[in-house]
Length: 280
Ligand code: SIN
Image: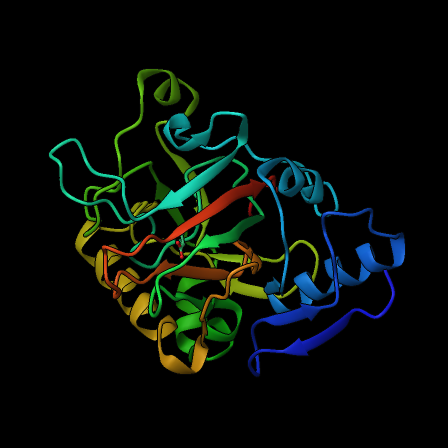
């Protein structure tokens, strides 16, 4: 695919790719370029795509293997490996459910959490509904030497829904519950398997504690690390356009959806995740 242009979207996170068409075969040089840009910049925004769920799934083979999601409720019937994100879903009590409305990293309660999540914008509100990212490698670099020493080697206990989470998730079906481990342990500082860079690995909706640390102390430390990480200087805020395919690296980012728009307007995106490795 010749004529692909890559532009930076911020000093530290995100690039946009112009001139690519992921509905058609992509040559090896372009595949390598896109994968390199993803590892180097954390968020890859491929503009102006026109993809059906099946075409999106086919395009994912450029980047990795599909990770089976926790909750099959959001699967698209004729292409169940692709899920959807919509602002029109509700909790069982009828209140509106906005997926991802709070900083988190995806499925960190899996033994091998997904390396990437990919969304494709099908329908968007006129304004708002941005996705915010924070770069946890930049945040780690910005910690004091004393904090780095303090957190070195600490391991967090991760569950589907932490009892300390401010955000409620949709409950898992019995079948999905059986496939999900009760808890897993992951380091709080992880090394990116492809770039070798160190970054924080925290997740306020899933972490319930730190191994060997009193609960109050652990929660205080996690709050401090989160407050440090979400400072504006570590953020990239993505303003969506129809046809954006956005792939982000869960190994180095937190992300959140913004529910700051007119809920009578539809926000609808296709979603898929890609397999990753055990954090170390
Ligand atoms: C998510 O957390 O996967 C959804 C993010 C978004 O809808 O912007």
